[in-house]
Length: 292
Image (tube, rainbow, N blue to C red; front, top):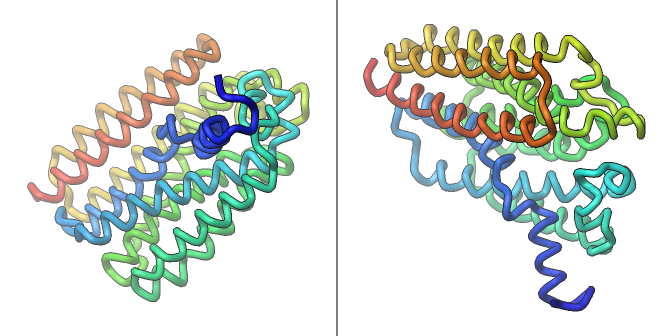
């Protein structure tokens, strides 16, 4: 076993800091961006832009969790699920997390510099959201909405990169992503609801309380409804609506499970199902564009 502070242990802790072994969050950030690229690109998103945004999603998500763990290092020590994170467990110095964040933001800035001027102008908002989200749980009863805004902003930037404008379909994808994040991240927050209550951290799971299942189902079905409006306005073919029907069925099933009560492991499993749902909707948009 490597000794504390040895290079192997340091690099392992660094990998854990940016969640290198768990890319669920990256995929949930990526899918709205891909939805926008495919829709704006008429089913043929530019390969160069697609590569830039895929890289940018990984970099920004990694930066986001690094700065999140820096802000939350004291709180994470008090939560069973997070007490083994590198900063909370003392495996990394807090300065290392700040250094990683700054380095990743530098890489993200280099990627953004390859895009058009409108997208470059939108980029600082993404940085601001990455910095503010960790603070939202300290002051807002619904911090999951801030996460949704941060994730949805990628769709706005992707649309702007392809079309050099902020078309209203992009705003529809933005709104849908906010609703989606409120739904799936409320499920995620159920894992820590007792610890969060004890230490005074706010979350939508605490805010909605016994009506949590209604909030989850309502937010997710609102997401599907907004996407349906986007599809109707852009003339997407029937396969897109089939994907939404399947997704809506999964949303209702998840809300019913939340109503019955879920364990920590079950909540995480339901959360991870949204990766598949994001992929399903992407396939629906792609086929809906190509067959219209």
